[in-house]
Image (cartoon, rainbow, N blue to C red; front, side, top):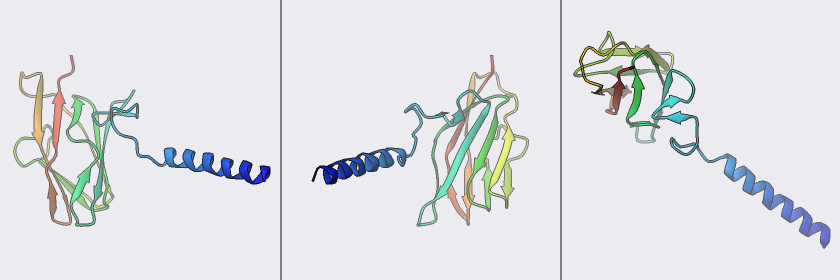
Length: 138
């Protein structure tokens, strides 16, 4: 009986630890992301998933970056990142067949301390329209 209770207790503790490990990290909860930027780096990662209904989704919206930082969109094998109005980058549209798009944020052309850019993530013709905020380096 004593051995059975000991084994059951050990199994329950192991199950609790596994459940805690399986929880996804959320921005602001001590995880490695701050507004999409990996702490201690100059890289923002925008993770893109696709729901069952085909709609793309992102982990962080808006993503907040600074001039000179790298932005990496990682997700479905085939996708397009498009800035339909204004863009901080050289191109309004970047496509990939390799599941990753990356670009370095250039200097802002305006005198504003930050600018907001609406952009589209297009996967299989379905569009999600998150926001990117670019802040000036001081």
